[in-house]
Amino acid sequence: MLKILDMKIALILFLLGFCLLDASAQSPAPVASDLQKLVETEKAFAKTAFEKGTKQAFLAFLADDGVVFNPTESNGKLVWQNRPESPALLAWNPAWADVSSDGSLGYTTGGWEYRPKGKTDQPAAFGEYVTLWQKQADGSFKVILDIGIGHPANSLSTAPWKSPKDAGNGPKTVKNGVNNDILNSIFSNKSMANGYFNYLADDCLVLREGSLPFAGKQTAFVGLERLDADFPSTAFLDFQANTSKIYGNLMYVSGLYKLTEKDNSVRKWNFVQIWKHRAGKWQLVLDIFNPVPPKK
Image (cartoon, rainbow, N blue to C red; front, side, top):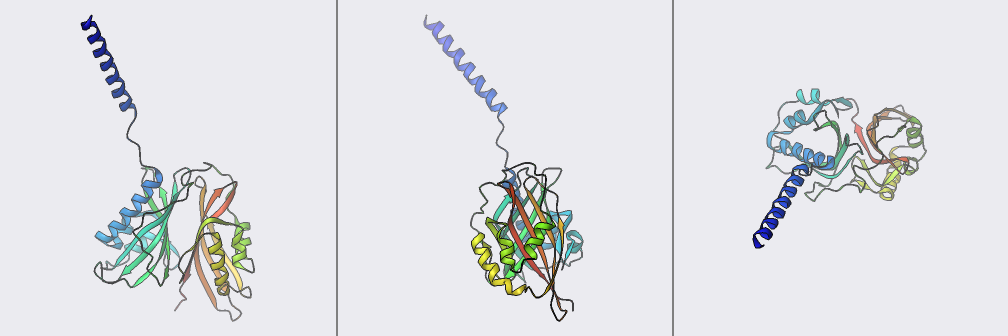
């Protein structure tokens, strides 16, 4: 009787082990999320710049049709191919990241610092960057747009990056995107702060040359009110905008903003906006203006 009982126990243990083995074979290790892959790629981009130089990093991580601003929208690879090698170090680290609901588009932003003579030199310039990433056919992310602004304080941080609660979530398809009617209602308003207010997301980030980031809707509104003097209603406004296709619940707009003063002097800014579809409408989650230097 004991032998039969021992055989039953052995059979149960064997079957239990087989089931566990079968379950493990059908449950592969969890795959990194698109958001994790995006940030890991961003960190690899910055690490390559630290180890091999900024030029080699951009050439390695830019998409073939990726855009940089030099001084206006230009093919990034052509720009960096034509730049001489330099010992200067451009260092950065992501503070905020988000990815579309279909995982095909994402963006990262954070502080940067510039060391003219390389790693051991003292930082000579600071600012914020914004990088747009698009998923490629092989599943990797490449840079499709890179832009930044400068400001007087060092905001480069090694603190853990953050993301919105709905990163990677939301409607997978949205029919209608941001159009010129929306852009006109923002840029043609006598007060740009008022023009923006109806579209800013609660967790928005607004970047302007010479200022630390305006984070959150109320902070951004106050900051834009303070900067409204730079965009007087007495000047003639013109803007050119290129709207992207919709990537899940994200899309972006890039273009040129131009003000002609009464004395016919002209000031220009590159601008990039990132929009996210939430609660049935498009909300502006990131907005950056980068001044175009006047022609010499």
